[in-house]
Image (cartoon, rainbow, N blue to C red; front, side, top):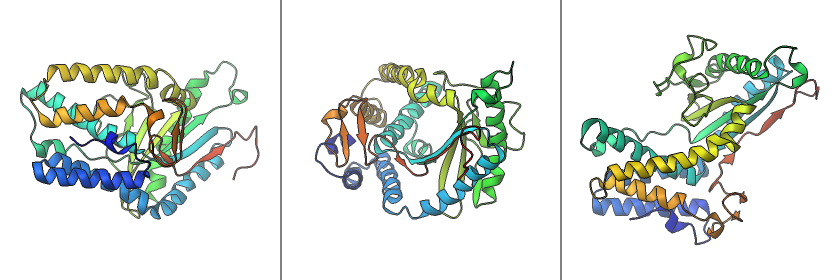
Length: 328
């Protein structure tokens, strides 16, 4: 079975790895008539296209930057960061195989049978290869006596979320209806924008993760992009807190449990997705040999190629007006 790990020790660039992995998957799939591997190959081609033909990102990031400027005018008292990224190769590979694993397991649990190839492929639509994240924080000096800082930040987070869809729609984006039907929405989110948002602030995930997610279709660039909105506390919890560390460990444990319930040999697509995930997540990053990538261990990483950490698109920071009067 072909897996990404096979290509991470040759000193090649990420683009070279993507081309080789995609081509080998395609050739193997033709011989085995495995349409899931063909879909996998095509998924990698999407990433190749983003990296090789990324001129559209200039136009897209400039239009999204307009919302950053809007925030500096409307919320000069807030501190916030505004960043974009292209999903890293390793994270994209994990997500692709993770989707297969989750869908087959849930389908089998509900129906007592395995889904068809067509049903599996229908779930392999990814709309977050490009994503932007807005993280806000209210400086203590602006908190009135008796007010709860987290509640104040939460109020402004939803206020910004309410303004975002229409603002970007006027600049060539179309908001997409959220595919996540679980959980509800906070009353602070306007009725007209609720269908677009996956509100993990009102209904946190089991790991404790909180964020607002919305998917936009860029009609000029002809691609999907996701926008995430968080407070600084939510972002800390997701990036360096329990949602990151313990959530990862819980995910690993859950996947092992699911594999025990579907024995090897019952479904080749489940087996291959599981094996690719286990191999990838068990890798020692310090042993990897990829151009522009170096790791001392799995925590100390210098990634200049987008292998493990996403490539940044739009890094902007705005200090509260109380600290800095310069807006742009």
